[in-house]
Length: 301
Image 1 (cartoon, rainbow, N blue to C red):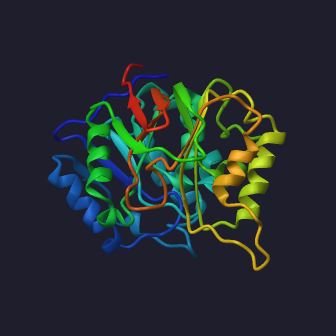
Image 2 (cartoon, rainbow, N blue to C red):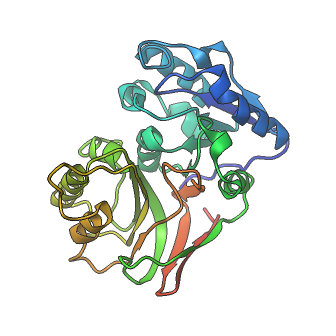
């Protein structure tokens, strides 16, 4: 993995919208938060552009993001929000210059597209809360983002889950939103999973579709050779009038039941207020015991 400098007082953080449109009001809190932490937010009126549901048409969004990718003075790019749209522009982006001067790209949800691309390029990234709804995030989530950006190793302890499979997993974490990953299978933005720890989270899906996506991943050979599986938030999951008969957690546990690696459910990352930062591409260790789960992030490249 390439080494990326961590942020310090005066570091410049660009806010970019590669997917859905945003308003000034929706960005206001995060902009002030950056300033309070000693960072310099970088944005202009283009952040608030609109084209149907998107923050400008595909070429427009790609050009703004490209400008920030290529700008050596920008220390990080914070994805404004998720929704949908990054997959429409990812092939328009040129990472050639970025690879010479890499910077942190921060986000989750639809940002999984960018995380996948960066993983393929050997560049670490940061799965964390985005400016949209940032005011609603827990103090722990906000602090974890600041700690991650400034190079402090992350450590969380969470309660055990009855569906957990005990053991210790260590390696690079990759992944993101399950639906977005599912939509990237077979492309050069789908991360290499063999020998990695897979993280997944989901929002606003039906249980049967979670089952479909997990079995598609399994049939594609993406789940067999993991070092471990981390399941974050499964938020606003729906069932049909005729119940599926299993929870989303049980569906995921069943899909990986024949494998021997550790599995952790209920990790604090995803579409909820306690969305804590997780480094993708850096060495991590997760100890899953009967009493609790301990997550440790090493910042060695």
